[in-house]
Amino acid sequence: MHELTATRAGAAPQRSTRKVSWDAVRTGCVVLVMIYHATHMSRVTHPELSPRTLVFPYQVGASMLLVISAYFAAATIGRGSLRRYWWKRMARLLPPFVGAVVLIWLVLRFLRPPAWVEPNGQDLVGHLLMLWNWKPSVYAFLDGSHWTVPLQLLGFTFAAVLYATKLGHGNKIPWVLWTAVLLPLAQWHIRISGAPETYRMLVDGFGAHRWHLFVAGVAIWMVSTGRLSRGHFALLLAACMFAQAMHNYIRLPDGQLDCDWGSTLGVWTGLLVLTLVACGPDWKLPPALARGVTWFAGISYGVFLSHQTIGYVLLHYLDTNGVPPLLQTPAMLATGTAVGWALTRAVERPAHDFLMRFYDRTAARQSG
Image (cartoon, rainbow, N blue to C red; front, side, top):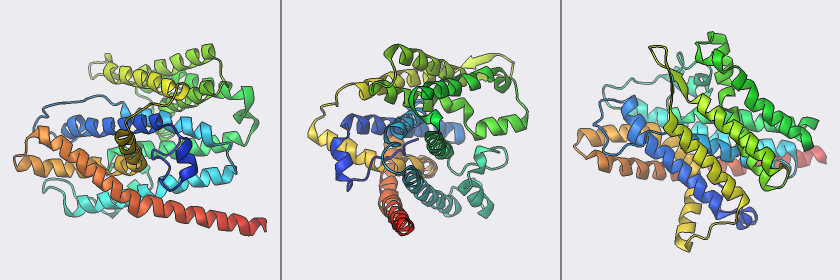
């Protein structure tokens, strides 16, 4: 629920007290997402590409970023005005999303390979409105990485609404967390057995089968601050792990069930690592490495938003010009980093600053 980027470098007071270990795990998660897309999903989406030399076929990074988001949502929601908290998150998430979508649409419109479908204005509008989150069979993704954005928007909004009630405080929070894990699990058999479209639309639209990732993030924050006992935390985290395993089950064409255990074990490992980061001391990284991960963490949301589809276009042209697949992957990672940096500098930070100044001026006038 916390935005995927780190606080901008100019916000010195918060940066000075923040663990570099959080920047490191955020950086690692985004890099895993990029490698997953460059080496695995690129061929799934575009099988005409040459086989990759090295393949990382596990969906881990994006799931862990949602856990990190929830952790920081819980850690920061009590600071200052609740309305300002919500506005700040919207101001961080939405402008770079819009900028990335427009950029990706332009790239596909004018630089796509000849055999690729040309997106039209309806595709642009549908993606900006995130309609693919509700009707993926009707509204195609311009960039598949963006599936996390509406879940974060919903998560921030739900967190703010919950915090404004008695359920968002004290010993009532664990009851909310357990409900968020167990309620989707109780309906797992419906989802896996071919649920009616209306049910699927609502469940997937609200991301119910991924609520356990948000629960895990909040639980990690609670145990790290002494708000949840270690025994209770262990049970709740085990339930989240079980929910992740059930989420990764699919029904094969022959009717058999199959689980992506590689991705499941990856997320389980990630949850344990995040627990250690939250509860343990900060990591002592060499100064140059610490500066590097902090810099990358600061542009990570822009990188996340812009690397996939633009990277696939790059892979196509590199592949058709004989560049070995082993070199294509670092080229995609480098391009995604460069575009993400530009998006952060040109859109994310200026828009966030403008919107926060607008909010503060408006709030000051209303209070005066």
